[in-house]
Amino acid sequence: MKFASFYKRLQSKDLTYAESNLLAAHMIRLRSLVYAAKNMKDIVVNVQNLEESEDILVKKLLERLRNFSVGKIEEYSAFILSENDENETEKWHNDLDVFYHETIDFLYDNISEKQMTEISVSTLSNIIKKTTGCLEEMSNAASHENNIRESITEIYGNNRIKKI
Image (cartoon, rainbow, N blue to C red; front, side):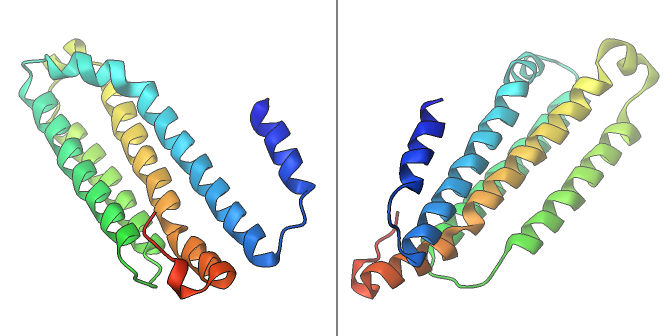
């Protein structure tokens, strides 16, 4: 509710076009990060429980998710810190789509009938889906860096830009 009243007060301000773009980019980034956090919240208990599993497939799957996630977060962070004007969003989304399908294939190619009775395949596939969903939202947040940088430059000039 506070967010809605804050947004309503912002709309009453006389913002320039650049200030409006800056505000919109920050709000989109914030929304994306909230969605990313929600995706992780949905699966954190399942991941914690699976980390105690002795099952080799579960260990490989969690390691695969961890390595990919760390790599993507580092890639998004590097993009934000760079002054690169390229739009990486399409590449990022393609990478996530390929990873999702390859990981689902890996799961179904390697799970045995015995494991299917001991491990919930739907839980594992949900963890894969929510992890890639989280990374997608994080990529959406990172992709707005150029909009933010352009708006700050327009408002304050080049001498006021600093890494946020």
